[in-house]
Length: 471
Image 1 (cartoon, rainbow, N blue to C red):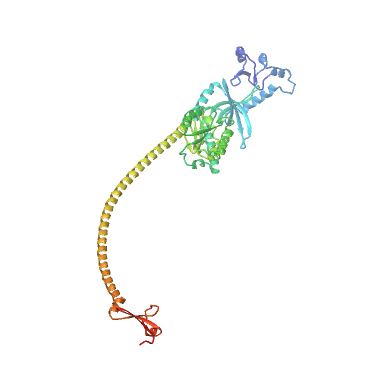
Image 2 (image 1 turned 120 degrees about the vertical axis):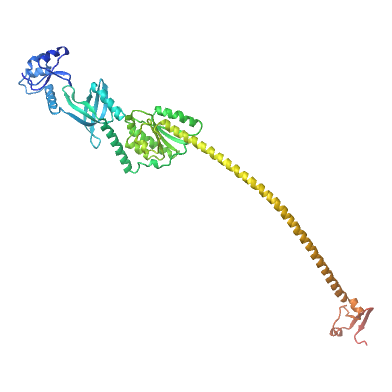
């Protein structure tokens, strides 16, 4: 009976030369000897699998054994897909057991898985390919990466379909990473939030700081060792919000931490949000380049300071944050230096204030002394002038009063003379008489005298009483 397709043999290593002499060939992929097509089967009877023996014993049976069916599939694949193909896929899982076993997946635009396959990177190729990939991409070949693999399709009756990895293109992975970043940037820009956090003024005073970091991370320990010194001196308070920075919870943990900080900021205002993570594999850091995380940074209600990875590392968060310090140690150094500089500025301002106050006081003192001297000099001068003026006024008053006194005396003399001239005695001495009625009232008119019954006439030397009708 002639073979129509390759039949794999159950041949132990010790009998390989026997089957080889009979015309068998060795399949390096399957690591098994097989009977090529168009070769008699009978000489290989002792090495034939039981399923093949059963088939040859029942040639009239139309049914196929599973092995025959799969051998047919294997043959078809070998004939139709014997080329090398460059295949794009996402790495779902990578495991190592002498060889590298890879799970690949393909998704549609909605993110739904539409294809899945196993791939094998044999040990004799693995070291060189993986070393080159990590050297050029800066990250190990691991789950979560978009890759471009050169593969050959293999099919085994026991292990099914698999892809034999022949080469890996690192440039495709780098391009996919860059394309992903550009898509996120474009979306943030379209939503108008790409530079939103950068619009906050640079933080110049740190009193209350919220810190988002992985739990028990080495970078957090370095940060806290310095932060605790500031806390101990009462210079700044730090409030810690743990979150996963790698793994499946990253996309939910970090935005949730930002949301919690924003909420507590309403009741207890913070000066800044610090987001830190120590160095690690580049692939781990690349997990932070996600839209949800970048959006949380962009829309934070206060300035965000990031310190992620090593100084050579850079993520999308460095671009959208208010300030980037590259490492956790540099973040706390920035905070400490700002606080120290503020203290120095305050001390310098105080010294400048004291110096200015001293200069002002000295100038005021000198001015006061000068004014006192001027006041004393001017007061002495004014006092002398006033004294002279007073002396002159006193002399003038004296002279004026004497003149006025002389005039008054003269006027008094004149008035006294007039008074003396009007004195009744003087008038009587001059020959005049004073007529009075009975009431001793002076009568100066004739008519009034005629009305009186009696009058008294006073002369210089006495009075005479006259009655009406007497001669």
